Structure formats: C-alpha cells, structure tokens
Image (cartoon, one colour):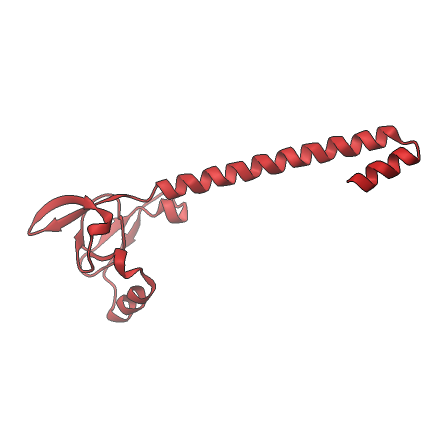
Length: 131
C-alpha cells in the first residue's frame, strides 16, 4: 500500500493516493469486523455444550455434571451432553448445534461394528450408551 501511495504522490496523483488509502481503510475495517463476528460465533458454539446430563440410575432420573457420565451410562432428556451410541430402542436427536439442521433426526440401534467404530472415535472420558 505504501508503494502505491508514494508513487501516486510522486507523479502528482494526490486524488488517486487518497482513493487507495480510503479503499484500504474500508478493507481493513471489514476484515476486522468479519474476524470479530467469527470469534463471537465460535464462543457461542463453545457455550452451547451442555454442562449437565440427565442420567437414569436404578429407574430414577438424576441430573449430574457431564463429566460424571461413565461409559455404559444411560442418558435421557432433551440435550445429549456426551458422545455415545444407541444400544437399544429409537429416539430423535436435535443435532442443530453440530449440523445446523433445524429438525430432530431419527436415530436407532447400531450394529456391533458401528459401536466399535464409534467407540474408537469417541473420547472415552466423555462417552456413554444412549437409551
């Protein structure tokens, strides 16, 4: 940018130098604004992760911190706080946070091969079986 400004001034094109400064300033402003919006969007996504899970123990529902959900735990409720697979039954899952899809997606039991693949890709610390 400075080379263009110097060249414009040297050849006497002061108006052209002003145009370059104006366009570059607008570009920098738009870039800053875009980056700020992207950062704000990422922060919102991070805060959408549920901190608590509804766990079913001995037939009773209990709300616990998501970190307390162990592998093999049975989750119930509207928000799934950990990775997991459905080992029995069917449900509809709101995946809008991850996919942007506005409607819940029907999910069902998975095969043994799918369970093994899912288990290898999930964080063992934060995974559970979903019923």
